[in-house]
Length: 425
Image (cartoon, rainbow, N blue to C red; front, side):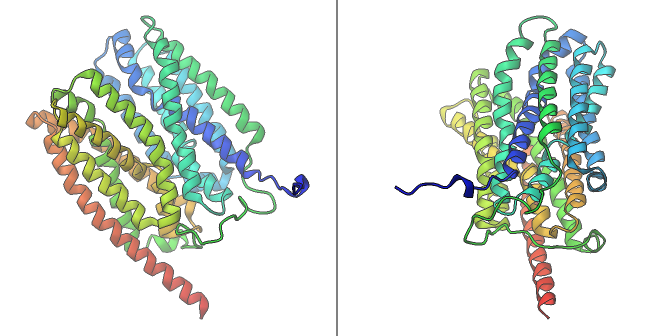
C-alpha cells in the first residue's frame, strides 16, 4: 500500500475564506433576511400599526442597499473587503438591537436603514467579489455553494426563531437579540481569520484539466465599458429581472390563498421552495462552469416563464395544487438570476479590470428593481382586484429580457474576441 506523504499536501487558505463567507451568508441572510416574514404579525400587533406601514421598512432597506452598492467598487478598492465586511456585520448587529428595543415604527425604520447598508457589504456583491479574488477556477460552483447557505441558514433560523417569536406578546425582541449574538460570533471569526487577498500564489490551486466554460478574461476598463451599448442593455435586463421576480415572488402566497388553496398546503409549498432554492443555487453555479453563461441564463429565465404559468393555472383542485408545487420548484430555479448570476454576468460580460465597480452597479440596479416590483404588483391588484395582470405583464417582460440577455451575451462574446485578436497582432 502506497504511503501518503502529508508534507506534500498543500493547504489552501482559500478554503478558510470560503468557509467564513458561507457562515456569513448563513447567519446574515438566513437569520436577518429569510426570516423577515416571521416578525410581521408579532411586530405589527405589538406596535399597533398596519402591515403596510411595516412593509416600508423593506423599501428603506432595498433603497439603502441600492445606493451603497453604487459605490461598492470605490469603497472596496480603498478599504478592502475585510473592513467592509466587518463594518457591514456591525451595522446589521446594530439593526438587530434597534429592532429589539424599538417602541415606534420610525425607530424601526432606522433598523431597516442599518440593515440595508450592512447587506451591501455582506451578501451577494461581497461574496461575488471575494470568490472572484480567491478562486482561480470553478467560480460559479463555489459561488453557488456559498450563496446556497442562505437557504440552509433560513431553514435553521425558522426553527430557532419562530418558537421565540410566538412564545409571548413581545418575545420577538428576544429573537432579534439572538440573531445579534450570532452575528457577533461571525464578526469575531472575520476579524481573526479573514484576509483581503491571497499571499503568494493567487487563489485556489488549479485542479481542472479542461477549461471551464465560465473562465474569466482580462476585460475592459470602466471608462471603456460605459461607452458600450451592451453595458446599458445589460442594466435594463438586470433591472427588469429584479422587478419581475420580486414583484411576483412577493404576491405568490396571497395569490394562492385567493385561488382557494388551503393555508397548510401553501406552507408546504413555501417549505419546498426553501429547500429547492438551496439546491438550485449550487446547481446554477455548477452548470455555469460546465455549460457557460448562455445556457445557464436561458435555463433560469425559461424557469421564470414555467413558474409564472404554473402559478396562473393553480387552484384548489388536485391538479391545481400540483401546479402550485411546480411553481415552487421552477421559481427556485429562477431566483439565482437575482443572486449568483449577477457576479457571473459581470465577469463574463466585462472581465476583471472593473469587476468590483461594475458588480456594485449591477446589484444596485437589480435591488432598485426589487423596490419597484412589489408596489407595482399590489397597485395592479388594487386597480383590477386580481394579481393575474401582474403575472401576464411579468411573462411579457421576461420574454423581452430573454431576447435582450442573449443579445448582450453575443455582444460581449464579440468584444472579447476582438480584444483577444488584437493581442495576437
